[in-house]
Image (cartoon, rainbow over the protein chains, first blue to last red):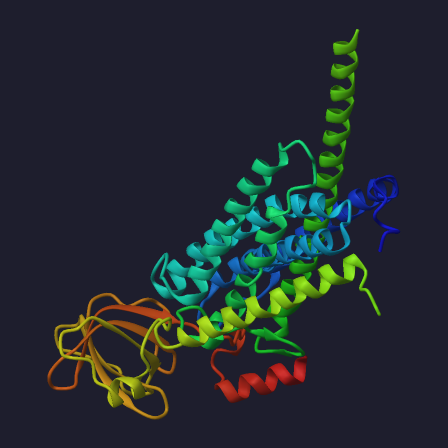
Length: 244
Length: 151
C-alpha cells in the first residue's frame, strides 16, 4: 500500500498517466457521443430525446463514483494514514460535483419531453439532489479545515466522506425500494433491458467519461501537491527573513 | 497477549462504525418504504381507498383498449391497472407524448365518490426497456426476440 504513498513516485507516474487518461478519455467520449447522437437509433416510444442518455447516464455514474472515491480515500486516510489520501479525496470532490450537476440538469431536460415535467420529488431525483448538497458541504468543510496549521491533522472531512457514502446505495436502490417516476435500472449485472444499439455507445461513453474523470483527478492531485510545496517554500522563506 | 497494531484497531473501529451506520440507514429506508413512494398503485387504492377529494398520485399501466376520448375532444377516460386491480381515470387536458396504452402513467388528482379517479395532471412513465424505433411495429415479445438474436 505504501508503495504508492510516496508523493515523489506518485508524481512520476501521474506525469504520464494523466495525459494518457485525458487524451484517450476525450477521444473515446467524443466518438461515443457522436455515435450516440448521430448514428444510434431513435427509441420506440421516446424518439430522439433518448439521446440525452449518452450524457445523463455517465454523469450519474461519475457523480456517484466521485463520492465513492472520497469515501475510499477517507478510509485510507483514517486507517492507514495514507499521505496522499486526503489529497485524492479533495481532487475527487470538484469533478464529482460537476458530474452530479450535469446529471441533474440533463435529467431535467430529459424529463420535460419524456414525462411531461422538469422535476418531481420522487426518491431518485431527491436523493441525487441530496448528493449535490453533500458535495457542496464536503467542499466547504475540506476548505475550512485545510487552512488549519497542522496540515492533514483535521479528520473531519474524512469522517463526513464516509458518513455521506450512505447516500450512494440509497440513490441506487431508490427506484427499486419505492415507486418512483424515474425508471428502474436498465443495466443490471450481466443483464440489459436495453437493445445493443443503445447499450454499446452508452458503455463507450461511460468508459470515456470515466477516463476523463480519472485524468482530472490526477491533474488536481498534482496541482494540490504543487500548491502545498509552493506554500511550504514560501513559509520557510518568510521564517528565514524574520530571523535576520 | 496479542496487541493489535494501531492501524488494525482503527480499521476494526471504522468498519464496525460503518456497519452500524449502514444498518441504521437501511432501517430508516425500510421504515420509509411506504411514505417515500411517489405514488400509489391501483391495488393499494382499491384496498385502502383515500377519502374523496384528497390529493393523491396514482401510478400504473394504462390498460390496453381502455383509452376513450369524450365527445368534447379534450376529455379522456382510461383504466390504470397493476395486474391485480383496476382504477378508472378521467382527465381533461393535454397528455404527454409518451402517454399511450400499455405504457406507464402517474396521474395526480383525487378519488371521487363513485370510485372514479379525476386527474388534474398526467405524467408519463417509461420503463427500463429501450427498443429501437425500427422495431416499433413488433409486439414486445417479438422485439425482445430480435434483441436476443442480435446480441
